[in-house]
Length: 144
Length: 144
DNA sequence: GTTTTTGCAAACCATTTGCAGGGTC
DNA sequence: GACCCTGCAAATGGTTTGCAAAAAC
Figure 1 (tube, rainbow over the protein chains, first blue to last red):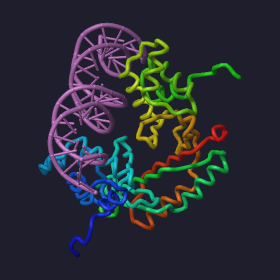
Figure 2: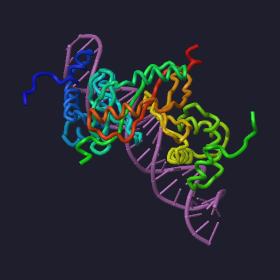
Figure 3: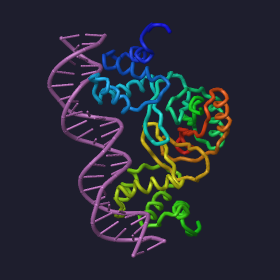
Figure 4: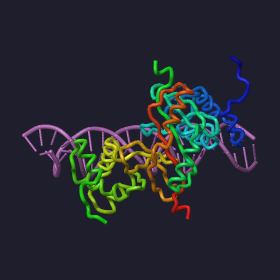
């Protein structure tokens, strides 16, 4: 396993967008990077910040998530329960597959959804500008 | 236009599931039925209940929405802003196309998404148990 | 008559905001 | 040094809950 070779993509995204690299933002980027592939809620981060004794306030956590969402470093998911969760992910267009058991998530590409959207336009006349697809199930490990 | 010929499908759904048909529930079912095809939030219903002077409490509105969601008479949508909205809809499997301008929504069938889910399983090993697809755009009328 | 449902008010939880002090560029 | 960012605490907005009275079955 290589040593750290540069700033995490999350930090890089902030940098590129011209935001200041502060200690709280770096720390939060690390926490999020450590959860790579797993979904998390704002409350999860707040709890981890507390339990680790980092002195980061609730408001800062929410502001950071908001920022990271705007620069495309994380994306919001809506769990079937209605909770808001987040995942770190690439800024390219994709969808998430979320394991109902371990909350882990992976990204999948478009997989022909563009064609689905065009079909909808053809049938309904709606102009489709965007879509959100979330797939729920069990990851290979959680199927035992 | 025919006169009312029977209980609304919403009321029928409650009846079938064995819940009591109370005045508040009938009134809310009417309000929701009147919005057929449009999305609404809990706050919308609370406001309408107030402005019409129906004496229905906030809690009852939330409890009714919850109930109707459980019996499959309404479905929750997650607007891109993160707000929770609802639509009255048939209990069959389908997806919603939501107009960003007038908030009106229509249902569309599966349109090949089942194949997409199978493809995901083939590529990732995830067992897909459910999915949520929301399409956002402009309805024919709002395109001018 | 028993059980469910309601309205009210208070509690609760998540998220946002105002502001003075501190850190970054 | 100017401006951005932070922590705190308070405000906010949405949703849930406890409970006694009222309605449905």
